[in-house]
Amino acid sequence: MSKTASRPDWADDVSDSEQINDPTALPPPVTTVNKDGTKTTILYRLDDQGRKVKVTRKTRTTVHKERVNPVVAERREWTKFGLEKGKPKGPQSDTTSVGENIIFRPSRDWKNVQAEEAKTGGGKAEEKSLKEQLRDKKVKCRICSGEHFTARCPFKDTMAPADEGAGPVADPLADDDESKAPGGLGIGGSSYVPPHLRKGATGAGAGERMGGKYERDDLATLRVTNVSEMAEENELRDLFERFGRVTRVFLAKDRDTGRAKGFAFISFVDRADAARACEKMDGFGYRHLILRVEFAKRT
Amino acid sequence: MRPVLLQGHERSINQIKYNKEGDLLFSVAKDKVICAWYTSNGERLGTYNGHQGAIWTVDVSPDSTLLASGAADNTIKLWNVKTGECVKTWEFPTAVKRVEFSEDGKQLLAVTEKRMGYLGTIVVYDIRYGEDLTDQTDEHSLKITCEDSKATVAGWSYLDKYIISAHEDGTVAQWDAKTGENLQVVEAHEYDTTINDLQFSPDRTYFITAGKDKTAKLIASRDLSILKTYVADTPLNTAAITPKKDFVILGGGQAAMDVTTTSARQGKFEARFYHKIFEDEIGRIKGHFGPLNTIAVHPLGTGYGSGGEDGYVRLHAFDKPYFDFMYEVEREQARK
Image (tube, rainbow over all chains, first blue to last red; front, side, top):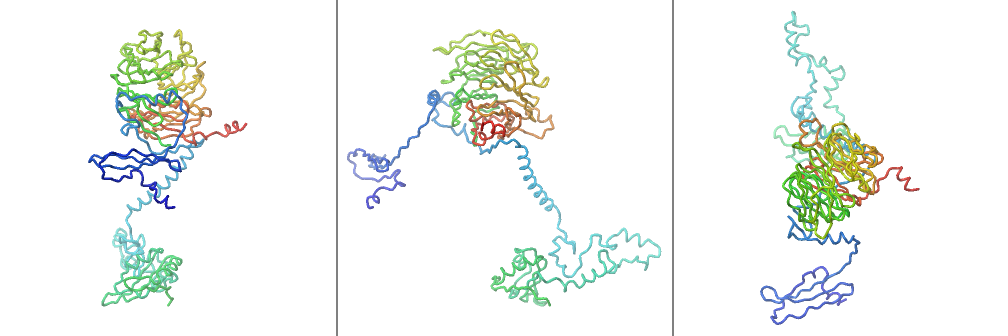
């Protein structure tokens, strides 16, 4: 074992040189054949500062046999001429380079294969174009027509969604016509339309919507307690949106101080998302406090 | 496969040619020098300098000692392949568009351009391979004058029996290689469309022509009967027959000067592979930025090279799927 340890390591033997400060004559090179068929050559030389350097070189010879047409082999040895005259052997980087890999698979219906590829590529393109279409589209709230998603509307809990036509009120032309009409007073010509007659409000549906704020489906709503006083709705939304689409975030705040009261409700579209959020966020550290998350109880 | 790119030329490539063993490749371009390359690693062996104009064509003798080139400076030059020295120059009144050594290398044919009151001709020279390569004849042994339509390309049929020429008007003609007698003319391609290339099969019993009419035709040398037609969607500049596998490779693309006058989207600068017998297109290889001007197949069928208007020569070595590809019929045939 000790013998093998004393042998120079194969990895660092390439130019294992050490200086011997003896300026006398150089010992002759020694070549020994190792067991594994490699050769170790130890030779000494003087470097440019006159110091003696010992060089240990380990070589392994491998023989590659290749059958070549003798004419071709002879041509391989020709000296270069013309613009290449005097250039070293081997490809020159200025004239020869290796191109990118090409996959070539001949196939009888290669056109169909290609068409399919194009189709999948086309599908991606469509997706992309859809994304681009959306990028150019302005986000518009259905409730207040502001530039945000309806789900994020600040008035979402206090206002009913405005309908596309927005009733006769929003139509100035119609308004004009009515005001010009003789005897317009009183005969439905007024600008006020009671809620139950508004477009889109169909009887009982409108009534339900009125009370909807308190009768909303709480199946997918989480109650979060032990929320920091400094908490903000946006932060909570960001925290919970990771689990699915959040429709509502309600953070109870003190009316006077504006600080959070310490609890919040988060409504999800999907109950499964809510369940996942409940499981993951219960015990989550947020603003130095540990959140407690549970499903909201129906009151 | 990873192609090897050879950037020895500054202008568009006009022709590339393998020698008989396929270890050397010669390329000529519009930039007045001929380059010789080792095909195994893409190393440039040297250049042959001396032409004064764009070089249209090149060919190497079967024993790879002599190289012939024809150029727009109205000369054919003969070169010593090994040393790069010019050993002979023949002068003509017009440019030389195509040179080709006969099968045994003892004759060289050249196609000269029709211009400035001179008719297009096909001339044949005897080539000597003596100790002194500069010892060459000054006089041509045969001269064929093309009175109707100029020849664009020409070659030797099997046993050097005929000279086959392809013409500007889409016809292919067969001439007796001894007497220069016109034996046969066939309208192979659409009338009045140039035939840009003509390459023989290894045994020279049939050849392929590439036409501006977007087709390539496989034609028998003996009776000029059209054996196969390959239809492409772009004007073709070149076509080659692959040994070992029954394929043909076609190359072309929208010519730069036509890009503004055609509605075609662009490009189509791909090498197209067709099955030689079933005439189906079986694949394409992309890579060039311009139309393909020339394609040459390695004589052993292991690879091919293409030269384009973009000035690059690309050397491809075929890999396994290429050799494995077979039609069901072929596979059954192989099983029997």
